[in-house]
Image (tube, rainbow, N blue to C red; front, side, top):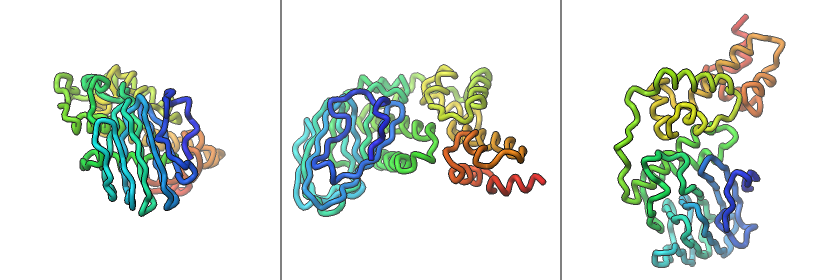
Length: 302
């Protein structure tokens, strides 16, 4: 089912790709700053139609897509009757019409990415919102495909994947879109090779400690450092040796270790206090970073 957090997504004439009949599609979506990802599975070998037009860019990654018959159309390009577009990408610029129909040969698995043209996660020097993107139908680009698959995994594991990691992938996606469109990336505003300044490091680290249990947006940390999310992510890793999402995850576990010394607190209570939704997720994250379960770590303190 699609996410119910519609208030985080701007009003659109057609917020999602319309699929008819709707009951044949199993849909799951997740929203981040400037980006919405949606996995779609067609559950029946039934002819269906689809259509989309909105002020957001649309990138489609088809993992399994075979049809006996059908056609696809992106405004500005010839219609295509390609029957097997497995492992193909399609890009629909904001405002362009995308529509088609097909009689599937295989149960279709695709991922849709709805991208804000204002590019809130992009490097401002990209001028992402000013680029005149070209429509593309059924193409392959290795780097763009790999980034799309990583984001698909994030959608499927939304409850356990760190928000900052997803938003960092969103940054990569905007740059990949610029590259394949033929626009060169800017060089006039390179990130400092020295990383974050001392005051930036202290300010960001203090904020993470104070909000360690919260779901901190990447843009919030970047704003504290007075940088774009793109430059912040690169500079942060140079300074701390870890990307922001891993640093935040590490600080959560360090806080949990402190709390585990108090034997009056249950593991479940500690998990909730440091920002995990349940004990299982907490145990998995704790083990990933320490090689031990929280309970075993506590026993070793004796």
